[in-house]
Length: 199
Image (tube, rainbow, N blue to C red; front, side, top):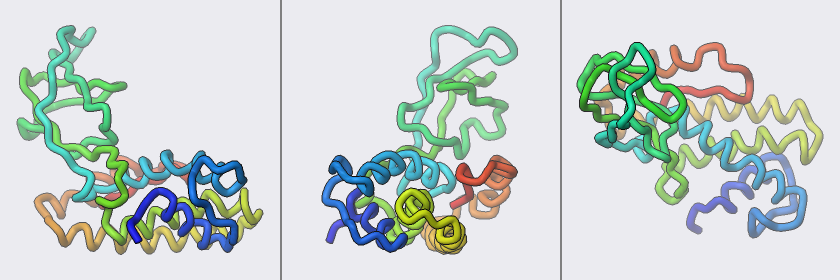
């Protein structure tokens, strides 16, 4: 069976021991409503937490006509599906991201970034399993009122996302030695529920 939003949600429901499966995220029942509420947020969070080969794009950015108010010389519009930056070109150019703009001193700029890949048929099986588990973390208390289960699922997620990163890294390692340092430094100290890790 093809992977879909519904199949991922049902996998998450299975993990919390819920027997009320769904056929649509807009069904009028508690399980569907919670899945619909949490799905996109958790998806984007897990996607943004890694350098997934199925969720990386390269683009030449369009320069915005107006310059930043101070400090930087140029600003560029970030893509609408942008989640987090991976690298920019020219290499070692000084830049900062503010709101939906990238500010820099370079008059040309290319960006490699993690994008909002909404099609689960493009995701790796390992990522799908990890994502379903992370979604289950958010379902555990609302559906079965279990803090213990929520903690257990979070620990399972950490193991699964680690495995997913390992498989992902084997598909191409242009900057494999830099990925751990890059993402860990960016997300160190992020509160529970907003964690982001490398891929």
